[in-house]
Every structure is written in structure tokens, then in C-alpha cells.
Image (cartoon, rainbow over all chains, first blue to last red; front, side):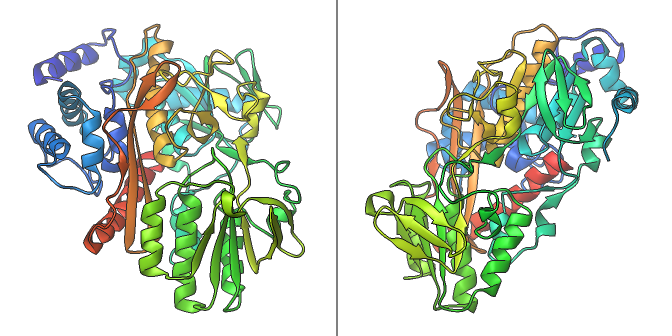
Length: 97
Length: 419
């Protein structure tokens, strides 16, 4: 989610206006599963906190193409389209706490 | 401690007030009452995420401590203790979930009734009861027999019993693991167990044998396990597939005698993993079918048999997704998102789910199977060209790295679920 959109929703929440989603920012398809290894909280051993959304998309693209070798991500990354990866990466960064 | 019905309502009210201000303001118009049965990886995850979304969530769990099946084989392998894999529910309470210790008896007309007689009213019910052993499936194997020949397929006392038997066994003994046909909880689990028992025996009782008597001719990550066994435990582990007479047709607990299609095997330690079914509340609520498992809508995990009840984790039939803690955790989050939308009168979005299962063949030797899944018709199918197992013939560093990642995964997921 773009920062401006996030900011807009934040204003809506603080104003107490009804909003479209009950979960803080509903995870796009596939994104919630990432927490199983990378953690929903900061400080997880495999936390993605140091990466930007662009870094995450690049890493997933490289895992998918085989340009980057890992242990497991090369088998998970090909399950997602570029649009899905972008949405997931932006959500992961937007929901960090 | 069992919370009475009146207290329960009061506590639910306090919990709602205690929720963070922003969350409460954000969701006040949308709060629904959700009851969750089962505080494992599926239920605790769903409860936590729905409470986070501002709903009034009551989690019903029989035990005050959860002992995880993941990593329970490290206890059986003698290099971890039961405390290392036990978690309490304080953090879920702090997250706004009302945790009730009790056992669910039945569910009908928006009311969940506990064995204590307490009743919890709900708008949506989530059942994540895990598995029950089918004590009617293998002649000779009942609850009493499981005290002599443990299944150790629910972690806790059974895990400690199996470990105690292995520790007491003399060198040169035969450890038999009886593995069931599909589907069952944790498909690679029996073979990881054989590996870690062999790890212990190699160090302490090297003349012993591990025999896996299997009711099937294939198993999860088989080439990786066989590669590891040849490298780490040559000649110690014998896998007997069904086609080679591996299927056990009856057992005698007093003699630890296992009768197969062809012969009778007398074991010194017998670990019987019997056929399984969804936890008892599933049948009582009418969401289990003739297989004993629960068919669900792959978009929402809502039962296809009883509207308003969602079933997830090991208890549900999730298509190509294996019965694993990772699956249950991923399903819990997907179900929470769907239920949140349903309670607000919106259409759930179609989920995409990931599973990853780590197995250890030794404390420093790990490998994985992974998959990405999405709804396809009435089931969950694996996304094409994704998923699969760790490469065969990989250098030892890769196995060492995956063993380290296995521990990282365990630390992360247990923290996410149990706090």
C-alpha cells in the first residue's frame, strides 16, 4: 500500500470514521503466510525488517528465476506473480511494527 | 480454572475495553462474537488475529499448556526437553482473547456447549481441534494399549513415555515405528522420528535397529530421508513398505507383538501411529464427513456441511495442503481474514497459502518440503511450477543451514502464535 494511502486510512481511523477493513491492513493473497517463517513481529530471526519493499520484490524475482540461490525461497517464489509479489512486499513493509 | 458463563461475559467485556484505543475505535461498529475451539497452531492464530481486528473472541482449550508436535521428535531423540516445546496462553489473554479452559461438547444454533455445561454464544464458530486417534481402526490398539505402545502423535505425556522407553531399552533392541496410511498429521513425521531415534541409538545403543512398518508404499521427502539414512545411520533404519509386508494388521500390547500381512514382529519399543480423525468436537458439531475429516470451502474454511462453522488445521480436508503446523497457522490467518469480512457483511477475498515443513535427520541435518496453494474449484490445489523438496545430493552445508533455519522457523512461529 502506498504511503499516502496508508496515511489517509490512519487519518480515517483517528477520526473514528467507519472504514472498509477490520484488520489493520488486510493482507493481500499469500502475504499472511510469510509470517510463519519471517514473523509478524519485529525481531524474528528471519525478520525482513532491514529490507525495503523493492528489495523484497527483487529478492523474490531472483529466487524465482534462479539468479539467487537460497534453501527454500526458490521453491516458494515461483508460486506468485509479479503483481502479487509487489502487493505482498508493500503490505509487509506497511504492517511492520 | 474454568470460567463460569456469567464471568465469561464480564471478562469478554473487559477484554474489549482493554483493546488498544485505535483498534477499538476502528472496529467498534464491526465487532462480532467468535468462539474458537482448540488452542494449537490453527486456533490460537485465528483467535489472535480476530481479536486484533476488534472482535470478541473466546478461545476454548482443554489444557493450560500447549506442547507442540513440531520439534517433539527432538525430545524423543534425546536432545531437547518437553519444557522446550511447551507454551502457555497468557500472551493470548493479553492480546484480548478470552481464554477458557474446558472441553467443547457440542455446537448448535449459535451456541457452543462445554462439558462443564457452560454455554458460549457465537456469531461464527472456529473449530481447530486437531486430531483424535482412531482406536477402532487397528485391532488391539486402544487407549490402554497406547500406554504401553505410545503413539506420541499428540505431544506431551505420550512424547515423554516414548522417550523414557527408548532410554530404558538395552543396546541391541528393536524399535518399531508403525506408520499409517494417508491422510494423517505431519506426513514426514514418522520418518523424522526414525532418524532422530537412530541419532540417539547411534550414540548410546549402536547395535540397535529401527524398523518402520508402513501401511503405504511412498512417503513425504522419501529420497531425502533415504539419502540421510545412508549417510548418517547406515544399516540402522529399515523401512518396510506395504507392498513388502509392512502393513500392520493387529497388535498385542502385552507382548509388543505386531502382526503384519506376512509375519509377527516382536519389538522392544513399539511406537504405534494409528489412523486418525478430526478431534471429537468436529463429529459432535456435524462438520466431519464419513472419512472422519472435515470438508471446507477453500476460500473461507467454512464447513461445507454446517454453515457458520469454520474448520481448519489438521481436522479439515484442505486439498493438497498437508496437515502441518505451518499449514494450520497459514489457514488460521486466512480464515481470520475471511471471518472478519463475513462479520462485516463483505465478500472474503480469495486466499493464497504457503506451507513449509522442516524435518531434521540429525540435530545439524535438515531439509524441507514447501508448497504454494490456492483455491481451485472446491479444493486447495498446489500452484503450478512451485513447491517441492530440498535438492538431493546437496552439500552438507545446505543441510546444516536448513537445520538452523528449522530452529529459526520454530522460534518464529511459536512466538507469533503463543507470544
